[in-house]
Image (cartoon, rainbow, N blue to C red):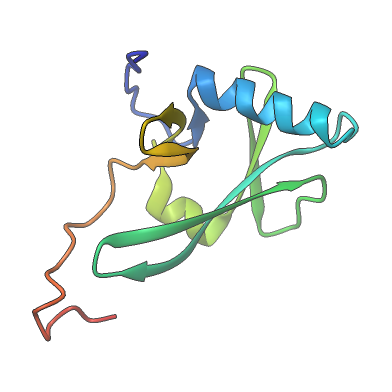
Length: 119
């Protein structure tokens, strides 16, 4: 597995495998050059933050846009507050394949047996 060096940043970056996966998706779906990967916090559960992702070409006023190895990364400013310095990874192993977010800001997950989850 590739080793990612975590650098403190205010942006959300894509690991090399994630960059290639986004490029492959854009090519497969024949999407033009303006598209990028939108990353957002979709909710929170007992296991921590839940993330959503989509291919998008229409950043809004409440979005920040970064570039990671030539791929546009779009994130709404509210999600960015919880994801500064995060890296989006792509894994393809015996457990399956998909995008994962390595977020240094993730608060500790609580136990589902606890009534103090605060969901």
